[in-house]
Length: 207
Image (cartoon, rainbow, N blue to C red; front, side):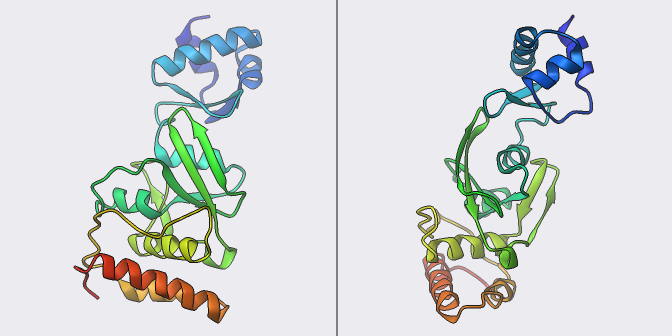
C-alpha cells in the first residue's frame, strides 16, 4: 500500500493508535507504524504518547497538541502562550501553557512540551476557538487571570511573572469579573495581590 493510500484510509480520524490505524488500513501493526512514521516525515501525522498519533496537516498546531494532551478533558492555551498569540509578548515561551479540568503535569510530545495546569470548574472559561492553532485560546484578560491564580495557589511552580509584555488596553474590569468568582476571601485576596504585581511589573496599561 502506498503512503497516500494509507493516509486516505485514515481520513476522518483526527487521532488514532497504531493498532487502530492497522485495522483501518488492513495492514499489520509494524506496517502501520512504518507508514505513520512516513506520514510524520511528510508533516501529515504527529506522534503523541507511545502508540498514539495525530493525523492531518494540522496535527502539529499548538491547540491540537494541547487538546490531545488533555484528552478526554477540554483544555485551552493560556498564560504566556495565549498572550503570545494575542501579540502581547514577543518572546516565544519554552513550553505550551494550558489550563484544564483534568490531571495537571507536563507532557512531552513531538510538537513540544505542554504544561497542563488544573483549575477549578467555576474558573474554567474565558476562551474561544482559534483556527490559527486548531484549538482553544484564552482571552488576554483570562490569560493574565489564570497566571495570577495559579501563582497565588502555588500550582505547578507557576511564578506569576511575565517577560516584557504589552498590557496596554487590557480590560481590567474583565479580570475583576473572574476575580469575583473566587468564593474564598483569602484566596481571592492572594490572587488580587498577584494581579497587582503583574500590573505594576508592566506599568504601561490602560483601564
